Length: 120
Length: 110
Image 1 (tube, rainbow over the protein chains, first blue to last red):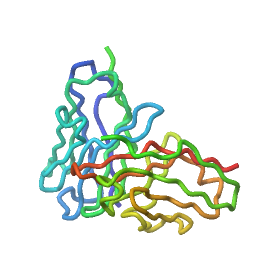
Image 2: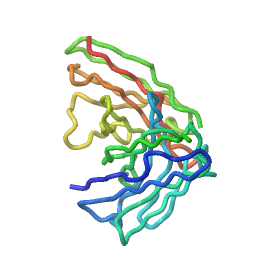
Image 3: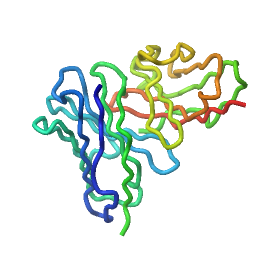
Image 4: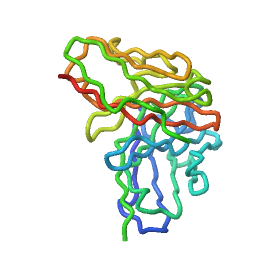
């Protein structure tokens, strides 16, 4: 049973870089057939797709965030990461890491989410 | 990219059927079969309910069904139950090699 768990600081200063990690347990992040995604939800708002990365390291990003986002995979630690630079209060949100079945729109396994607040 | 358009709220009585629409463009919903739907209860992570327009994952009740016509996808919940009260979101693959979510719909069971 694959499980995902987000980790990282709950508070980030404005203009700094937000860094989160998603630890994958119960399965290998290198397994063929899956992508690994980050999705966020601002307080009281809807879901926003940030991007995803394949097991081989090929990434796609939300065009509105692309200039500030990097998603990477560390197969040795069975985890993937999100970096979002130059953050503002608008980046305050719950951040979810999610598994995606390759070749489908099935975002099928979600982490519990982690709240990140951008504030000085 | 603009969010897909969903009604803010839909309500129904127990046992009734309701339909939630998700309207996009030919560059997203209308152009691909990659539309999925998620249920989110307060304070919880979203749950996959339908993927690739009409496919239901194992373990999801067959009361949930999906369809698409042109630039609009739809999620139908039949035999509405109290536990179905939640927020629902659609998402679609786009021509920008990205995904876009809908604005979300709050389902109330009267």
